[in-house]
Length: 621
Image: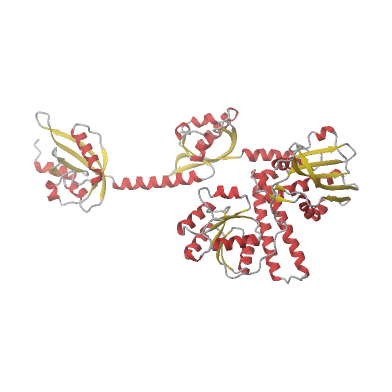
């Protein structure tokens, strides 16, 4: 049957793909109308078109390479971006075949062009979605994984790879199962298979080997991924609960009090904020009272007691987080003297407290809160040794010589209690060892740790039935001015000092400090979180003289807030604030240098002095 040229033309025009035949130089020999539509040109102009004229300049070399490859007989299809007549891009899938003359010489190239722009958009959207997903899960503080319908792992996030110490390719499939503890593997596989077959969520605890070789308990939880009724696998997370499990075991072993050390940092941080609010409101009340008011002394006692408690809380955070608190020159006799009221209410009512505190002791370089903890623990231990019976406790401080050459001070805590056997004396500094029915077993261990960190020593003299005497020796520090541990009185107003952006998520603390600063002629802008702080700062960046930034807040981190503040106004002075140490604060904003640092709870004169300096200075103090 003879087919007319018109029939061929109709067939060509009915094809949904663009058809383009070009010579070895790329000039058009033949095309259909669909090809003209793809290029955005009039069909009548197609004979004038060159396949290289519709290529973006930066992709010309790729186009030449594909052309030469396909003209040489390589028929593999490829995807390419073409430039339409209006300059807009269009993605096409191209399949080419060379056309030969009777001598077998290629004389033309036949190409089929399919518009894949929508597919490319969908792929770009999918990639964007995947990138957002990966960004989200890679920054989440949990191990995250995906499995497919075949019950094999297809993805692990960065924290998971960091935990395992392995790259993704060594974890996907079933490779990750090599990290499961041999005793847990079979049970874990049964749980996974059962959940996959039932298309159900699951949660279990299982031991995985960390990159350093240690097996850690992970709480593994997962939910099924189902799309249009089709099971795609599971999405799961893993949380390292090893420390929590160990803490719980210690908690049970030590009469529900052992978990204090594990939970101390978080609890103490929040408690410290509450104490800071008490200090702030006490300062506010002092400002409202006449100096001769009968209530002034009581309010000052509230303030001083809250500061004392805050220092102990800060020491607890230091102990729990293994931080090094900054030392200062400390007069041991003076420190003990300031604690006497608190000590007397902490001991048995039947006990009598005696003091023999040497005057003019050389100073020791120490953290005052930690030394108070030493004194408090030893006094409470002495009180418990009395077993509620009448007796006496003596606190004694004297000068001492350490190692036959170093100058030091000596602290003695002596009681008339039950005393100890040699077996008990040998173990009293062991963690969790106690002879008390309700004992914590942590006090003397903590005392020994503090004394050793200060370069000192602790010993005990005791006989059963004859009481005990604990002897602490501490080396002297360099000559330095002794910080006034009782705090300072609120400063009198000295004039308008500028605008403070005060960022803290603890409402009671923030409002109390803001009120105090306003009374000292600061204009204060309050913000309860990073996002609202940024918005308020954006409203008028130049008006803010200094920013006080809490580094531990929900939502935006302290570092993120600092980065955004510096992006908006590079020169803004920022004072970091936290109940933790300076080292912890600096680590939280790694890579950034704040103007200064102040530890909570705030002593208002210290804070005001810093704010005044920061408001009038562009340099770090």
